[in-house]
Image (cartoon, rainbow, N blue to C red; front, side, top):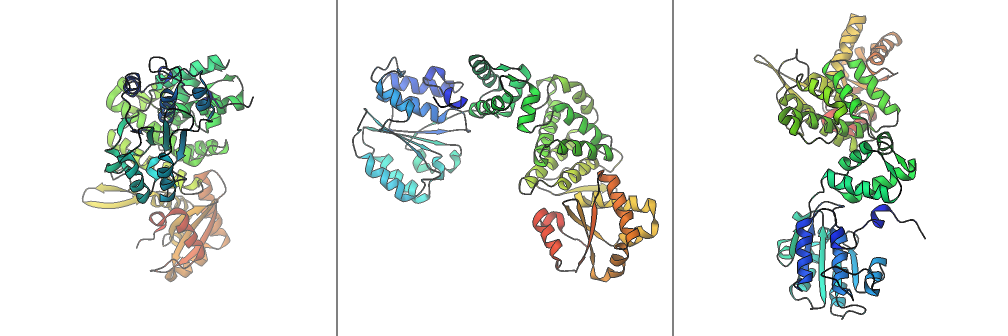
Length: 497
């Protein structure tokens, strides 16, 4: 017999087997038991919370030959065929790939045909929000006057996209995210049944990272089991999912709070060298900052996503070193960085500069940092009546200038008119306007270039090359700069007078 994925093998076959969703399950169970099922239902909620599973239980219940107090028997031919996907009168439609008006018109024609194998025809339309406007209008006509032998069950993860005309003709049920405890209990039940030795911390980590979806949790357990075998520890979960330990994140934030640039770069290099993704590191850091923020506000009542008891002492220490405004600013920065890395090739430079900018946010000797909107790419800094703008490039640019000035003042004077554009593949791009040809050409000389590359190497703890390019006042003429704009986005690469 072919191997069956855990989430399929453990799909609930009766109402009483459903994890969570108590209110929904009770209402539907009573409706079936008392013969009060309506003709159309709308199930909405996050993925992996049981929408399709409950839809199939309803399909079995209305066609079961030996229904037992509202529960399908799972033994008769109808139940068996539905479980095996061979029942002619249960039709599953993926609206993401069958979203047009032609498919819905075909459905309308077939709805009129009486059930061929069972008592009721059940149409389960998944991701129904993907239907086109014309398809929704065509479906509406069927929902208004459905045959008595048909039940529609519409499922969606985005209920706000369902037209009110459709919603008003369905009974709506909202599926909630499962709690970590509910997911952990099912994981332990599955592990015990399949002779898997699941470490308690490993199970808790899988449950927390499932984000309320039991299917995702079971898929993760299946994936780790395939790779690691029957003994699963916390380190195995971190390894397979590409996550970093919360103690690593806590120590990384320590380096940020200490303004330890070299330590920050070294820790990021270590994680990336172990195969961690830059985007994942940014996302994990955002989650850690979220836990720290909640702990600052709520104390022991905070519901952590990442932090465990092992990291609690470090969290307590960092609570006294930060404030809510700083944490919010840093959290927004990491969320923005994770989003930017999602659209890029996972560039290391973007991540490093984001952490250097975060160090600026937590710098207690710097002027007070004012909170900005989440999408902002700059940090407003006020010092008395003077206002300045610091962005990610300027943080690094100022460090480069300071390092060069310490080594050679004439080289620093040549570098000052330049602008840091960005980086790609360990190449820093520095632009000069056409009026600074002399400065650019002198910086391209061996001694000056090597001095700047040595300073960059001290900051990033690896070899970095420098590429100098020309700019004019209005356009970015050089092809390298245009590629940098495509890669980093206009808000990062933009040159300002």
